[in-house]
Image (cartoon, rainbow, N blue to C red):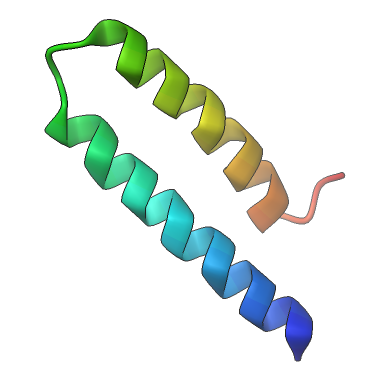
Length: 49
């Protein structure tokens, strides 16, 4: 049960990062940072260690 709560929190944070990445299109470095964060969150969501 606790794992599903963890996965829901990770999915929610991933959604916020994606929305924020497309909202701030002017700064390319911000998008690169957001993409790096997204990679780690996607791996956590897929339970890849």
